[in-house]
Length: 162
Image 1 (tube, rainbow, N blue to C red):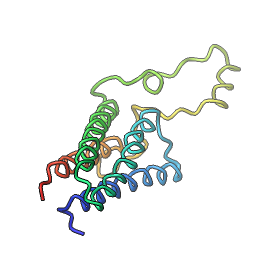
Image 2 (image 1 turned 180 degrees about the vertical axis):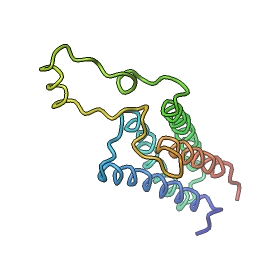
Image 3 (image 1 turned 90 degrees about the vertical axis):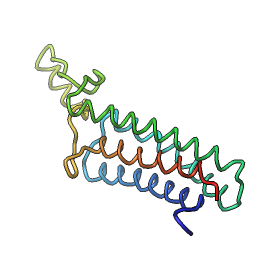
Image 4 (image 1 turned 45 degrees about the vertical axis):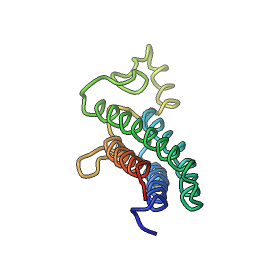
């Protein structure tokens, strides 16, 4: 298998997508609760994994008529994922406001009893406060970078002429 073949490209995209979701689950198991936007950032990967699996199958069987549309779909999925990841990272860096459901000031309780009830029932991970930074970047920023790389790789696969 060569990385420069459609099969190799599709396999790399599939592997990175699966490992990205697995990594998200590992961080969650380690206690890093995902916010609402983090959970939504996983959706493109859930969509891309079966599409990338089909691309691997099409490449292995030499089905060029179906392979190119699969790569185009992957490029669009991951381009949208990169944009959404950059949007979320921008919220974390304070470039723009995020959704009120998971950013900004918390609602004030009307009484001590309401406050105690909220403490027992509500555990919201904030979208504007990254739970973890790796090499200075939040997981949302890493998602944007990885998604952009996968989109470019899918474009390379779609343009493959060999």
